[in-house]
Image 1 (tube, rainbow, N blue to C red):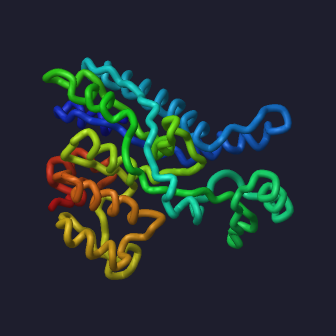
Image 2 (spheres, rainbow, N blue to C red; image 1 turned 90 degrees about the vertical axis):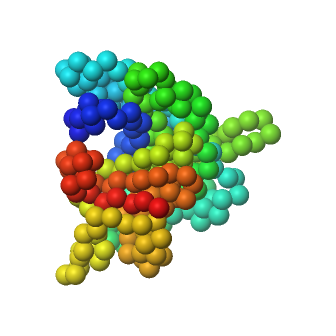
Length: 284
């Protein structure tokens, strides 16, 4: 949050998104440990809970830091629903691991009783539940978020939204319905940015710059990428699925859908990157 306070102080109007992996994992573990006495909650509800708890921690911390800087902003968290397609192929091929590890006997029992899909992780010696990770399509609360973000000459509100990739919902004849799935947070953030007509998308991660041949002797940090080069390198497999891959894909889609600029860097280097002194910029 201190890095974002500096950004706000410099005049940027921001919307904050975040991951929720450890927190939703803890909620799922609580479900399992208390299942004899308390009914377990579905994954979409657990995602909503993690949005609330992380939203609270972020908004309180940021509110206190803004007060120190005498910046008059109200920080608000929006419990955000993200629309996915019920026909998304991810529902037939769950890949996203969630929750704890189980012994084979326990895993077989859960698959039979609950219909879970379990996959073995031989490196860790156990089985883990895997759930679908469908593509985000739209943000249900986009108009409310947009109104808050662009209120008045000086943005009065700092909005936290689409936490953990948002709560996955499908459209039915009766309205929206939650589904047990996990949406990639980077892709959801990209959809949110486009949905509210933002032009600048910042992705904070644990590296200062995007690199080609990451982790190899010929590793090469990149200061600027064109959209076409980003698409080319992504197609070549330069960016691993479990790390930089979703961030590059989110950047590509943001630019394809009308965005103008993406910055990828670390929190520590954010201010320097905003001044053009480091980080990786991706533009059309």
